[in-house]
Every structure is written in C-alpha cells, then in structure tokens.
Amino acid sequence: MRQHAAGERPGRRTTAPGGEVWTGHAHNRVQWLLALGGLACLALGIELAVDSSWATGIAALAMSVVGLIAVGLLILFGTLAFLHVAVKVDKDHLEVRCGHVGLPRRRIPLDHVVDADFAPRVTPRQWGGWGYRWRPEIGTAVVVRRGEGLVLSLGDGRKFTVTVDNAESAVRHIRDRLKPTAAL
Image 1 (cartoon, rainbow, N blue to C red):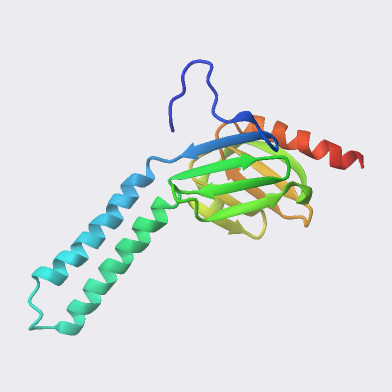
Image 2 (image 1 turned 90 degrees about the vertical axis):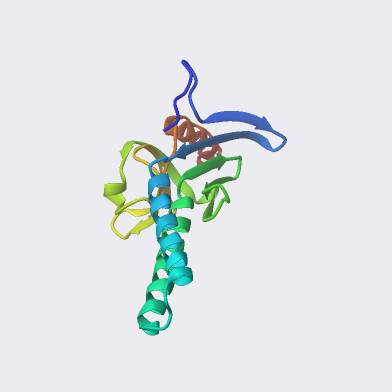
C-alpha cells in the first residue's frame, strides 16, 4: 500500500458542480508479481513457437504454445485489472472502477442503498481471492488488498463490499446522502 504523509488520509471530499464528491482508492502492488508470472508464461509460449522444431510432435507443440500463451494472457490481464480500485461517491451514485483502464466497473444508485458500514478488516481469504467476487452467503465484493473496506446494504437484501483507503469517511459521506431520502 502507498505510504501517506503525516496527517494525510486517502479518500477525500471535493466540491464539484453537481455537489460534493468523495473519491478514494486502494492499490495492491503484490499483484505485479503475479502479472510477471503471466508475462513469463506468455514469453515462454512465444519462445517455444519461434525456436522449436515443428517437424516432430506438431500437435503437442501447438497445444503447448497455445496453452502457454492463453494462460499467460489470462494471468496477465486478470491481475492487471485488479491492481487498483477507484471509488467515487457523488450525490446520486457510488461508482467502483477497477484497474487503470476502469474495467470492470460497477455503478450503484444511492437510492438503492439502505445503509453503509465500515469493515475494519476485509481479506482476500474471506472472499476466495483478489478481484471481483461473489459469495451467495455474503454478497459481492471488489477486493484488491487486505484492509479496511466499505460495505453497502442494498435494498434487495444483497451486500456489496469494496476495499478502499479511508473507508470510514466514505461511509460518513454515503450516510449523509441517505439521510434526506430516509426523512421523506
């Protein structure tokens, strides 16, 4: 995780033309090691395709090359997609974007949110690993690292969890947005 200067907390409120917006993020630098593993599989597949003698055992060699390249690409893009998560809460929505490209993305209207809670310790182990996860007994999550997270209780009874730095301020910001609708 990124180190912050004394007194600095990630996650912040800013004023935008449509109202106050909270933004936060979380990073997982360990996944770069997994991405390097995917890159190694990809390189090995390419090396095998270029430097091997295709005269003997063409079927086995072709399957090895295709398999290594496919596994390398899956690992590489699967890990790069979850190196980073960005969370944005405006007056109407919570938006979660993964990776530097912003995919996968989830946008939840705040009028579908019943409550927001702070989770002091969310771990990949609870969810079965890093990434975009679904477990029928506890809901859906975007887990990019171990640590604090934000848990939304949705109107349909489901829960959505996301690991993000300074999740407590996100919870306060969301609850501030929920109060006016609860009073109606």
